[in-house]
Image 1: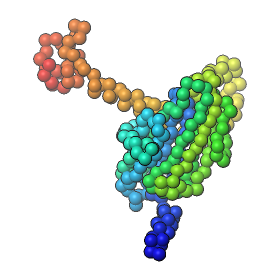
Image 2: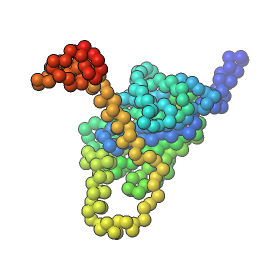
Image 3: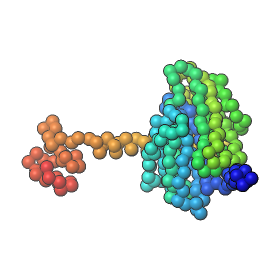
Image 4: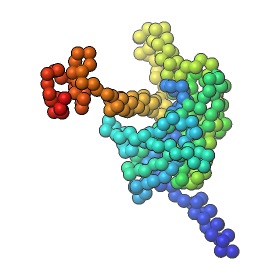
Length: 277
């Protein structure tokens, strides 16, 4: 009898558990600016739950995962996360010591065919209260299908966003979003969008364009994928710089092996960092 009572108590504790995370939004961008999928999760940790450590599932074909902790600004630290493979799934460990956080997941679930059929699963070791999932429908998509009840809205560029409302998700429970469409062009939304904007600007007089009524913008931040791309570019640049093997003399010019600064061939010490040449 005690055994069954213990199981019942654990069940209700799991169902009634309060999430340590609030204001969670999940954005899914298929083929937006590259031939893959970028997922952004952002939310806040309840102050009483800090620091918070938990794990979440990422797709099996995930290439990289990055964490931006704290309020996003030029000084925000971008941390690459290690992907762990266990229990037939891929997981990442999150150690949050600030309230605001953003997680970026990059993966390529497509093959060489024009058919795009993939899933994204939200699953964590902590319970999640009410949150929303937004899926951007690619401009290049045909026969777009979302096997979930959703609300569709278009932004000023004609891009459709599908919004899914999730009331709650108990710890270790999974919410899977199946998505499918056809892309016969192999282009991304950004490439097609640039072409459309160029055609519009060339086909209409400037005066007519200024008189157009601009539709209300969709609330999703469309600039964020560019910000992430910029962050990744900086990371690649830093890695390249740190791994670059500076030679003492190259093409008749002398460089410091410590900082890479160009110096005169006759110098014995670097004027920039003071290192011995």
